[in-house]
Length: 294
Ligand SMILES: NC(=O)c1ccc[n+]([C@@H]2O[C@H](COP(=O)([O-])OP(=O)(O)OC[C@H]3O[C@@H](n4cnc5c(N)ncnc54)[C@H](OP(=O)(O)O)[C@@H]3O)[C@@H](O)[C@H]2O)c1
Image (tube, rainbow, N blue to C red; front, top):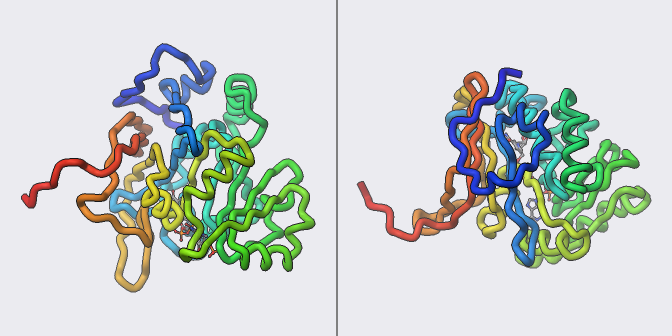
């Protein structure tokens, strides 16, 4: 991995050191998260995007973030560091479908070289269980239950679904999988409310921090619900392009904002490795003053 260099660091909490020295050296700095709001977990998201904002080529076999980052080792290292940090990781069903069947959403699977450093940080420093809870969101319940996330005894997976989705999963045999929990939530408005998902995770699983790994449809709904606190965004130095008939999703898909209600962010840090940039933003909400026409 080409070393990561910190270009901007506005971390307010410099007095308390969190990352063990090995990880701090690789990340070129420390990593602090705010404590969770009272009623829900603290939510931070992680994406990689091209210079023109595309997060997936949406081509079978090449739809994942690795095609966007060029399998950049520093991006994978930061993904691993972020996966080692929270109580739970959340993904949408289509992101699961577009990922290999053995994928486990663990820190060590994305950057094995730092496996021991991640484990030491997570267990000894953060005092967390070995692995975060994996939360899969699927309204339809149409999930391939042969995937490792539903079969590996060491994986703990929660599916957030609808009543119809729970029935479909039960028919497919999900109730017999010992490491899988299914929750049917209200979807009378057409989709499950992001805040209802977070409140359930908070109340029933004690989740205080959650890494949101997308995809862009699920992430857009969380942004609209004001349920995202931070965004880690890798900017990859390539342009993907798009045409009207071949949709390549951007960071948010299926949700739109107006200038007066669009979420804004405060830049917390900028890091660099070779030609990639790693941006960290805090969500600050809509811009209060009107945006001028020029
Ligand atoms: N570059 C990156 O960093 C990055 C990160 C993540 C993903 N991706 C890519 O993005 C693509 C997938 O993104 P996507 O936007 O198409 O899909 P997605 O957000 O991963 O998943 C959408 C699906 O999640 C379920 N869902 C979402 N919101 C729901 C709600 N409120 N209630 C109930 N179910 C809900 C639905 O599943 P059902 O259809 O089962 O009902 C829906 O079809 C993949 O190609 C992936 O590789 C890229």
